[in-house]
Image 1 (cartoon, rainbow, N blue to C red):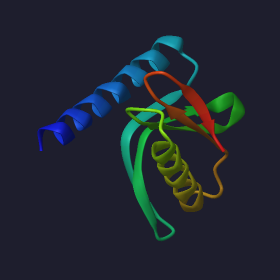
Image 2: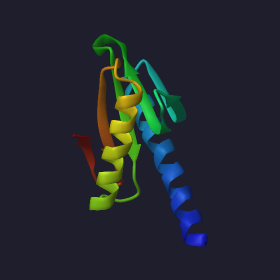
Image 3: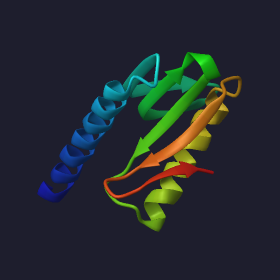
Image 4: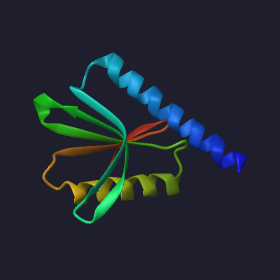
Length: 105
């Protein structure tokens, strides 16, 4: 319905806001977003995946519209699925919401 459409719209806007912020800071050598993957029998979508060459580190950003328990749990699940798909990559998970930015552990 309309509420779901609004959420999707807000989520995509948040992703683009995050990408713009990251690009402005020039911290990363590469930034991909809305990236789908399928590997090692695992599949999913990454909201934003940023790569920092000097650390050889991939930053996995999961964007949520709010900082609530179920959203945090879902973000953790999505991050660990990505880690299982790409075990050879050095990764750091980050939950990005309008009010808070937190490491995913």
